[in-house]
Length: 149
Image (cartoon, rainbow, N blue to C red; front, side, top):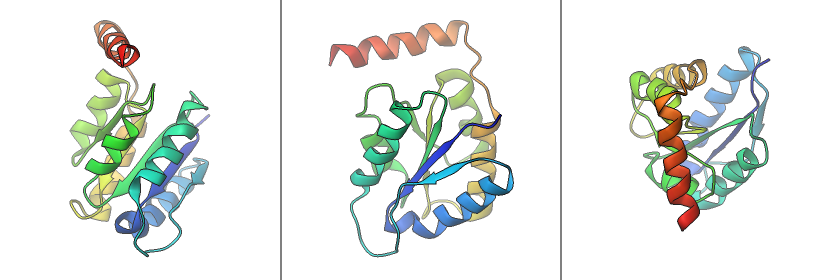
């Protein structure tokens, strides 16, 4: 069974978000679109929080956030306890952030990469599995740091 995907974007990522949703639905994923709903200027922290809170409440899910660079979305998402968001602009990083960091939110920069590469990055992220082992210890260490805050 494929995991549920919560997806959000700001105005810079609005068009790419639609392409990603279409791509994922064609692969059998259930996508929950948490906005934005137009290319009008908006504030990315709103959508980063919506997706992060949805992923927090559904531990078997993933999130995808798209803004101009992916950076603002990742910074906001990582403020949420239990969220491990990574900006990825290549497939290797997307795969490795799942395998080694157990990332649960992928952030993409719509102004940094084209839509074909974005879809490949999404596939690499969702197709990878957390390896556990020594990496689980490191993820636990990240959680300890988070819990001190």
